[in-house]
Length: 262
Image (cartoon, rainbow, N blue to C red; front, side, top):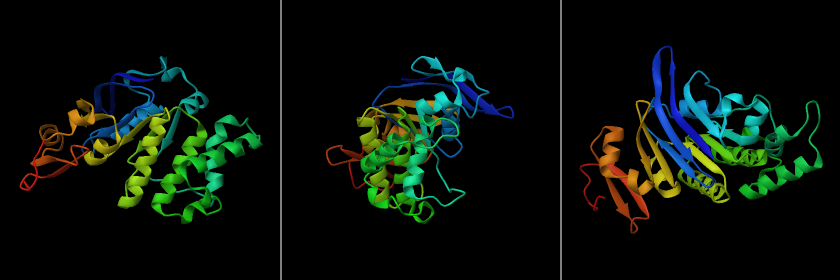
């Protein structure tokens, strides 16, 4: 369980997050929506322990993260940043193997067990065929899948992702999000920041909508992705339309009224 209690954080006297409270349980796929600068990435950095000068509490299975070492945090949380460019050239397999570092003693080399974990992670994501490719020469979608495999190899129960579909074509967006949903169904807590309400509706089971650092709306996709809520969140005239017997919802400019809004 990941619990956020009355979380408040700011930079140089400016409040970025204000009284955020939320609980995510095993199997949840949580999407964090909001305008640029709303505090989405800052929220992830607080959960990761990068931003520590906050008030309130962040608890994992009842333990305050302030009392956890870096090694213990790695047991609980895997993180995929919005952009990642390695300093050196590694193969895909080597990148995924790095996910097992927390299981390897200092100054030791990975054992057969860690190699098997990396191989299994590649199989789970379906990119075994990329094992010997140079990570730096992969497409954006292939890199994201590689980072997902690395996160799986870390074997942490919480996965945080900062806008994982940024810069990806439609096909790779769907591949990444489908894999994330599968990971949640396997029992992980998955939390992503995103600018796409449609993705949130289609793949998530919980949504946090943040506005000016405050939790504007919290609930299920059907509760949150509505015309009224999206107008308030994004501050523009729009309508939310239902498709495929409400299996999908999409936001469009208000003047487009060809479908029945929900």
